[in-house]
Image (tube, rainbow, N blue to C red; front, top):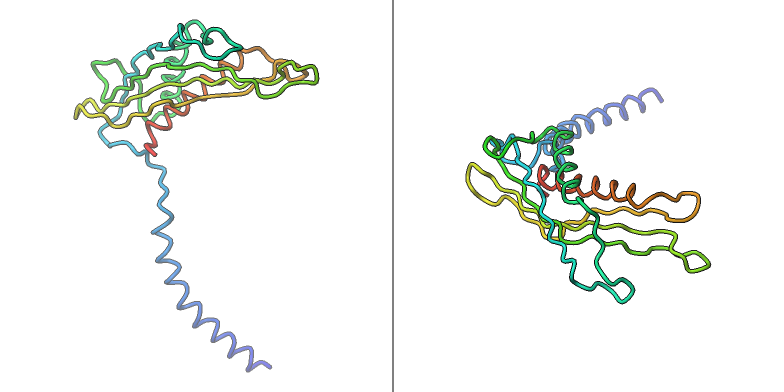
Length: 191
C-alpha cells in the first residue's frame, strides 16, 4: 500500500512538472484585455467644445405629440457633464482650445420621452428619457478624426406615478450623466 502511494505520487509529480510550465506560458498571453486606455500616448488633454443644439423644433414627431420635446439649456448641461466626467476619469484632462491635444465636438440631435408602462386607468406610470447626440473626436497634433459616432444615446427611466415617483428633471439629470459617461468611455476606451 505504501509502495502504491509512492508510485502514484511519482506519477503525479511527472504530470505536474509537465503542466506547470504549460500553464505559465498561458499566463502572460492573457485574454487581450488591458487597463491601458485605447488612446494614442501623446494625447493628454482635451478641449470639449460646447455641444450645439440641432434639435429640429419644427418637425412633427407623432400624432399624440404635436412638437418635439426640448429642455432649455440641455446642451450646456451636457457639456458640463462631459467635462466633469473627463475630470473624474483623469485619463484626459480638460484644457482650453489653444492648449489641448485633442478636441471633442458634439451636437444634440434628439430628446425623446417614451411611455414604458401604464396603470389600470391607462395613465403612464413609467417613462424612458433618451438624449441623442452626434460626436466627433479629433487629434489636434495630427489634425485627424480619431472617431466619429452618430446617434450616441444616453437614457434612463423614471416613474411618474406611485411610490417611486420622481420629477422629470431628476431623471433628465441622470440621462445626461449616462450620456456623458458613454461619450467619455467611447473616447478613452476607443472600442
